[in-house]
Length: 304
Length: 258
Image 1: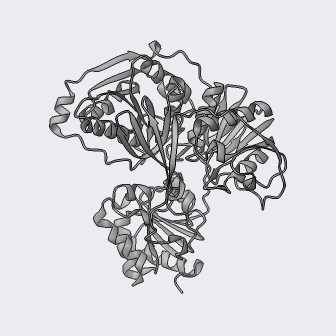
Image 2: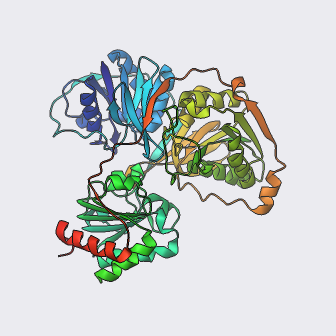
Image 3: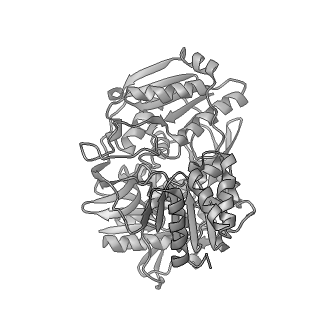
């Protein structure tokens, strides 16, 4: 069994998450080759073959050309699986590769089960084991689901891919940096985050008061930021900040995967939620089953 | 200008989910249904484009599923879409993303849509495949995960959301397919007059058999609840007693109370 692992490269650097692809292939027991569209100096530290195409020529984001490069590498390698991270790069490119080959794609894999690949449905409240009906398949992996065992070491054997450049229907204009961070949550010892369960903007001060009583910062889940209740610099999760405080208190946060990915490295997690089965309970050291708006003021009063 | 918006009906994600009798999906009984949140942004974007271009674009909304999907279709019409297509399929949930995409592509082929809009993923299955796959099957350029969109005279400037707050700006020409991320706009609530007006709009029903020619490329071996970690402490009951207990745990297990 052979797996072709598609590295991620952004702003002239290899994204370290690329090593999660290697961890997955190890779990699968697959022989691997990697493909990188990037600078040779960014080559992953692995042994084995690396198909390399220059970012200077093919761009950091150019789905049509990148698709052709991945297809070329997959063909040379006779890969059974073509594996991406389930990221803004991977979920964009993977279906294009799968469609070109008319093979099945399995998205956001969290585990390997007997005879299938495990994925979550309905906010990870259930799991599904999915099997390809085609001999080969395209796979995307959930961020953080397969963690590398140790520091990567090795020098890949590089094989260049050169394709005749073709005008792409999509032009990459450039990056737009994250807004200036109002709050640097990555340095906070205590973060108390508000989720959809706080109900409305007017209730956010209840959560902020608990954050203050614990000497911490206010965080928020994505729906709360999208609704304009809390500004974006407070957002915790894959599209916000990834945090690892000594204490994380999740108030009315059900625990979408994207949020969990941003806070599960916290030392100690308290979740306050009405729903005992909310996925946040999976990462919580203590789950308080209560309405946040009733419980938080009681707790805050005992702390100040 | 012609715009196609594809929407899906999904359960309220706050629901409790059980595995169905077939052991391959969630049990659909006793669930509250709503429009997939990502698709609300797609509908809103289509309606905003229609407003921007002086009402010129014709916006068609399409959904695949059993009779209940007429509900979100009506919502989309009340938000401002002009007409609707209901692809009737009682077994839509058992089709894989490739088949769902092929149904949409079969409908859209030869209809000369300038713009196709979808959510970037569904809240229940979450494969993030259907939009991109429709584009590939139709041979259209495609940009995903949009949190910004500007349209002018056949050119789209799209802002894609990447990780950690970074965004990537891309430019493409119509016809094109775009997938919408949360936060792209602020989806409107249908007003009562618009809900009334929507009742008169056309909903064309097409049996799925007329559009489906593809076999599934992936299948479900089984569905089951996730393994319970179950090592955490669960507190229930009196608010004051829980607060005291929690403060005790914080003093014992963390350094933040010292």
